[in-house]
Length: 351
Image 1 (cartoon, rainbow, N blue to C red):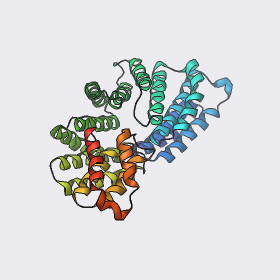
Image 2: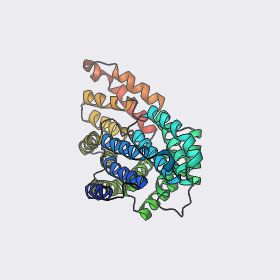
Image 3: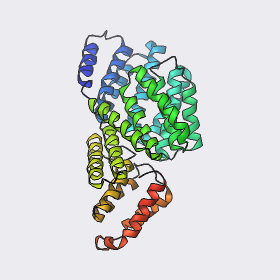
Image 4: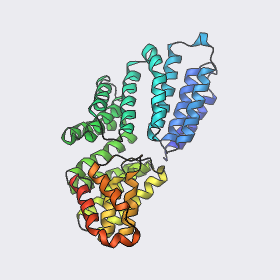
């Protein structure tokens, strides 16, 4: 992200000239350095900075650990949990949430407690592979209810998590105004990352509704915003949606190019991490089938069966697995099965 390097340099410089006895300030500056890496998909570098922040705090004598110290310690673990979420480390999230529970209960602010419930929801989402249960939705709803709209810095991501939970719980109609509210809150706060995420899930909503015009408009907006910040997950989502639109308009070759660009973008971010790669894979497989490239279509379809990816409807997953059992020489004889598989995807609003 172009703007992250000067921000990182500024945080490092501030840390260099900070009062060495002010461990909370120094630790928070270290967290901000880590965050600049995370926004560029530098997750391992970010974790190292978060560990450095914890080391700064734990070096302080226990007699000097006042409320601000405890708030800083909770903040460190919150950042680490987000890192585990983005990288799909579900068990690490479980362990960290357990570690955080008691200190948070004793020392956490209302905002930190709201974020804790949000992270509980996110951990469950990963475990459920984004087929969100009622219980997970309630965690997200509780987190959202704990923060006032008067606090613009905390609201956008909490609202986004709630809207996201509605969407993947199957409440598409309720998710639309909730996601639009998340986008508006992010715009007011100047939070580009949340804007890109909200726009991405608005694309999914419009795709589910089959609204090519709205989905394309949002995709163009997402691509411009995400490109300016080098957010490859959301550049990929925009390319995938433009590919989906091209396929709907009967332009299979353009659809193939766009969807392949989406997969390349996700590879640049961190392979396998973006959990909604069906956004590109399913339109791409359809386009490849239309272009006579059955073997390539089948190869790409295997991506959506990975554990890191959103769980697809059972009938669709079973259909893809069945196709995968055919040898390369048999593919010409299973065009009907391919067509049934992709028709199933279309029925669920995925193509």
